[in-house]
Image (cartoon, rainbow over all chains, first blue to last red; front, side, top):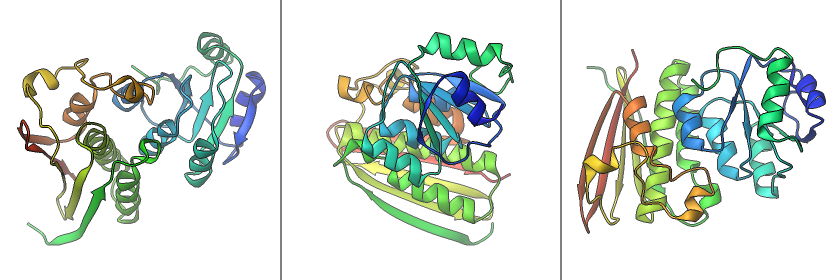
Length: 116
Length: 142
């Protein structure tokens, strides 16, 4: 699923735009960055309620190219700057974690590359 | 044995927690430039990032030294912090002594050391209460 379609499905705002044409195969929803590092597999999109620059750092380490902030969380300037620097697309949506994951899953984002 | 390809050394300065992870970021970039396999790079990236965060969170900084030769990546993170009282307990998933502000960053859930053990091919920890901790991790290229 293309990032631009994900953004539209979640009615998300595009905070930083690295590559909206990127195709994402699966997703991982977590607020705990150590869990993301323990369980996320390749080429996932990360959904999180944590708006902190360390989320971008974790994404960088895990080669995660797209991060979606849920529950109306907004990135601060430092998080935005780091995302731009690391070429990570950062979206924000008012959807809850449960609803955002459900919408993406129903739309076909069911690839087995997310959290175990 | 083949010769050393790259030797890197970083000071881990506590300072701004929001920006912690710069050293790991820089090493990851260099490993990518060397053309190492993505799965090897990821194992090294996660291990050193968790170790870097630990040194900054618990020990007010330290040093990180990375050596790469033809067969392995060796990461040594050393600090002069408080040391680990009960290493066996600290290795258990879920055990943590981190404060609330660390938890707000998505860390401090007692996954750091288990994550290092999971991703590194070898993990050796030497620690002494009141003196500091030295974490040595090895990731094989093949």
